[in-house]
Image (cartoon, rainbow, N blue to C red):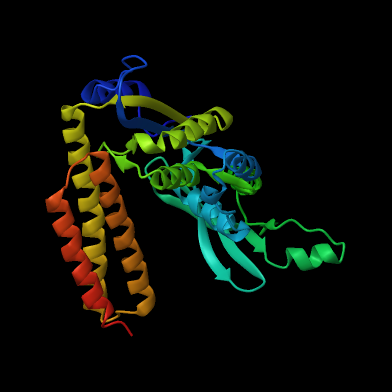
Amino acid sequence: MTMTDNPITSRASLADHFGGAPAGPSTDYLGRIVFVSVFEGNTDLDKVTQVLADLDLAGFAPKRTAKSDIFRKVTNEANRRTQIDLNDGKYAKVMVRKVSDDEKEILRRLVIEVVDAKGKQLSYESAFDLAFDRDHTAKAEKRTPAPRFKVRDLFAPLDPAAAEAARNVAYELRSEYTKRDGTVDAAALRATVNKALGGASAISVRKTGGAFFVPEANAEATDKLKALSVLIPQVDIWVLPLIDTPEQRAKIEAALNDDVAAEVAKIEAEMAEMVAEGNVSKRRMATLLAEHAEVTARADEYRGVLSKELSTLKDRMTMLGHQVVQLSLRAS
């Protein structure tokens, strides 16, 4: 398994940078530095949902991925496979092509191209149809169970080695679909952790991601996240108390400015896009107003955390607020 970053190197360098080592029971802390790494792989969704509920984090639970979306993702990923050595100087490349997507089924076709050592095409054949059965539920109710992911042999005129390679890929894809059904992947777990951190008013303290600051008032949330990493081994979370010093306050203020600047730039880009498209809708503006309110609330909270007015940040948020309100008046 691989990780999103190197936890040893990144943790050590950030710990040194922020001076986050504990200094005894009488030390005042500004907050917590939280390091997050997520291993690639899949974890049972029901387990993740139950763990989050037990930790009072149910509101951040990932949604169940639609079976049809799993089918699409698994079959699309087949196109990233490398060539298969068929021996005798021949190589096969397996590809999956889109055929149809309707109310009954999603159909993909597995084709196989055989080339020689110089890349000259020797054959190109449709080998199998891969189908996702949308009528599965109705059939199950009639007590005629059928797999959702169907593999249909097209009996292409392939030499034995190429035919075996195509068959292996087809059934590996079906096996991968079965393995992923009812699970969450690393991306979904990262999103869950990031949402939980957002609920604790966290800000990123590293441009490449994976490290966050959480105000001391929300330290309980970091305890829950540490428990999550114990119960879900795919998630690795490490927390350091951050000593309250003028130097650390300055660093957190700089990180806050970067965090807010990124959010402001995102909102401004969305507004510019709406104006360019001539599509200033009430629904999109409601989303922007909510995003602005969220960023403003975070900036207000950090004025208290840092015991500082943050006037430049306040002025920028006020100006952005005026722009959002003015644009919302044009919403249709």
